[in-house]
Image (cartoon, rainbow, N blue to C red):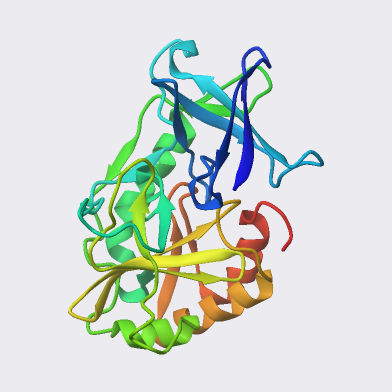
Length: 272
């Protein structure tokens, strides 16, 4: 459990202290942003310490939505294809995401990147024309959001899940399944989902009938600790094996395998 101190970003006052599991920390990750509900009121996370401080507490600064002069979105884009959670699924080993983090950083078949170009152009428009900034120049949100509707099938056809899990270093035994994906604040899990810790990140996705459909990357304070070099090497191996490109939607970036180490150095919150 991690002790979390929530501070009002506007006044600096302490709002509350809570003990949360590391997988449920409401912390921005992978270029995305998080929201949290405190005593029935919605707040968005403006910043967070990369790791617990000397006192053992993680300090999270939040801003009340009502403080904004108009409704702002915490991210410039979201996917419209968020999967449905099976609330009856047992609460076993799960990797928890916020819904607005779904597919924000994902692997896309090189032959299907063309399907993403129009979506990337619209995200760039939001970044250029709709970012709202505070007095210190930092972005506090967006007055528009682009809802992505593609690519519907980002992965190559016919990639077996077991082959991907082997490349990721997941346990080889079918009796030890990879953790499933869940969404913050919701019971259950996403059917057909998987999540594999790799270094300081988690590779997650969806499969159907043992075929990979979607594969994303979550990096940030809520993901596993480990060497950055391992994450880069494993992901590069996957990208080369299946001819993939990494797409960071919130930054409107496409990253080929040779540039992955540099991308991770810029994306991870602190050296691993």
